[in-house]
Length: 480
Ligand SMILES: Cc1cc2nc3c(=O)[nH]c(=O)nc-3n(C[C@H](O)[C@H](O)[C@H](O)COP(=O)(O)OP(=O)(O)OC[C@H]3O[C@@H](n4cnc5c(N)ncnc54)[C@H](O)[C@@H]3O)c2cc1C
Image (cartoon, rainbow, N blue to C red; front, side, top):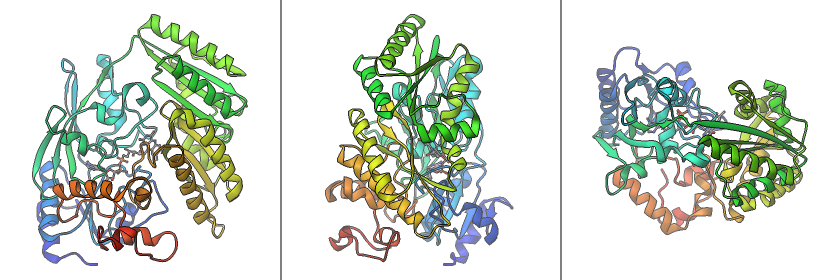
């Protein structure tokens, strides 16, 4: 659908030449995020250079009721930055400057297009670091991290993005610029973090950074089975030890990582990476306890990094695990679910059953300390029906997570991918309460429509023919 002419004129007048993309082949660059199975070419893409230009673009959208989708680096895995065909993408790529660093507070102020890793790089020289560390940290942006409330290996001890944002300047869907702060009541910042671009666009963010710990020790333990590794995780937590990270990889993921980056992992059924940080005496005590627990649970090999180089090598395989899957399959689907830690072994067994039932392989790599699973469903898109089977298997895994008392997402968000599964987890009144909150920010629904909330169009599309959604039948959701 063509955009209103006057809308385009307004947007072009507000932005510099070259900051409006309209050529079809250039628009294709933005047709998807990390969830490449979902693709929509937007009507227009704009690349504002500052907050004023973001505001001008959003105001034009509000005046003409044109939907907009904010985009950071496009690494999202739930289709959060999937464009709307009759709408525009607002890329924050050019808002990529560190604005202020105040070690005394300590707080760093950044534009949303700054990458996660750049934040740590900016403060490291003064002995600080930014704790949330998604595996995509070299490229994903702070704007995307805030929108997704992103996690990472070290969020077990230090908390998710929401625990590290002091304030954010946000352009609301009507174009108004507001500042939301963690000290305000009600906690609108808490609402905004994790809202997946549906409540507005962050244009400046104040982040809390942490002082580098006195000591960091990293241990890798190899086990015969994921059950044994899972047992060690439960025992570490039961012993009241709080590592900064506990990561688990199964055999298939270890093999792929070894092919890709040769981290020197043992040939075994599962590896655990446990990292401890804090005061030296405490860290050394905990390290000895963790080593003993791993041995009691059947560890066949234990390595403890002696220096930063060895530590980086132990992490290398884990950090490249998703990309490494390209070595063993032509395509894969990254699932993201959470279960109570005690349910990990049972859910992993259920995933193995589902693998056999659906005839597809699944690699498991996850933040074991958080119970946050990332099953990687491998398929071959050239084989007819396999992509659909992979999708169904991934959905069945989420069903197993919910059956075990877990949730449909741990850190990758709901986006377009899981909107249709929201009613499996939330009742109608919960969904209506969430929709009301959203309408309070965005009464006409132009900020990232089709994400998070189930809509009949979205949920009727994949897989199979359109069916009226129960919420539509009940008059609680509209067909867009
Ligand atoms: C290899 C790989 C590993 C990953 N590992 C992790 C991991 O360990 N932990 C984890 O949590 N995630 C992980 N992810 C997922 C992804 O990197 C995160 O969700 C990340 O925060 C997305 O950032 P982005 O800049 O790419 O955002 P995008 O993908 O561009 O956008 C994500 C969402 O944020 C919205 N958005 C973007 N910028 C803004 C803004 N300024 N204001 C408001 N809304 C905005 C978009 O509309 C969209 O809904 C991984 C992804 C990949 C590909």
